[in-house]
Image (cartoon, each protein chain N blue to C red):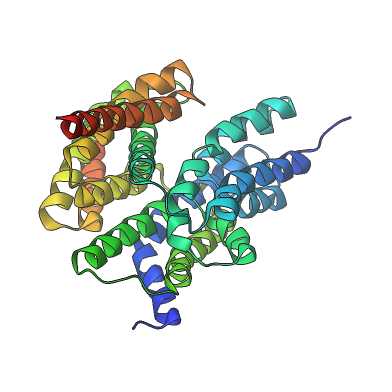
Length: 249
Length: 107
């Protein structure tokens, strides 16, 4: 069986595309923070302590313009609300792990460090089920180490990138902005489509993809979040209804 | 009382940590009912799809109409390549290169 260290390394290897994606976006954040007048310490502290690209970008304007603290905090809260379902979805895979390691490791939950381990755990669970193998008792720690291999290294890249971006500030050519901006969403889309196995999942992904933009136009904080949850719940509800209907006949 | 920028970041970080940590602390290892597990999976995939859409097509609360077509094209190509090759990285790289090429040619 794979050692725990090897499991951490496996997570690190799976995170390499995230590092590639994090380098330009963290540098962009460092540049933006510097341009908006944040100090080096504030930019680094925000990257290390908040560690949430979308929320950091979302509050940068209001923070720099010294808008009310409540406005900044509400915007940050709305952007970070997505961590709640992501973190909840990971919890069944950390069976038997003590609370202190869970508390510490939860800091590196992000959209990227969620989706890569989540897809991996789903794949492993499906292959264990198809081979009728009972999961080993230390499964929670093995999964946590994979998660940390992804999460910690991505976190380090994010914080280091912020410092670098702050330092080089305006030195990066804007000609590459388009391609750099595509890396992370392009990788997420690739991960989803490779793992896509059912019609309901396709409907959830397509529906959310299409509805997010009008949703964000109605409310930049809530819109995309509400539409994603509403579409997922709608598809799930129809599926549940069909399941019940097929059972009752 | 005046709240400094540093204090705002500190509170924001605590709020983010609460979102991340509360499910880990109180639900870890719990095997959810199959229906709930499926709902969580759909919500997670829905959120990721929304993030893709908002990152590529929205700025603030405005649809980025000028860039939407070429980014949608790059996304479509990335998705097709990823599906065909079974590699998300290959799809992402080709999509990024296409974005770069289309952007340069259009200037």
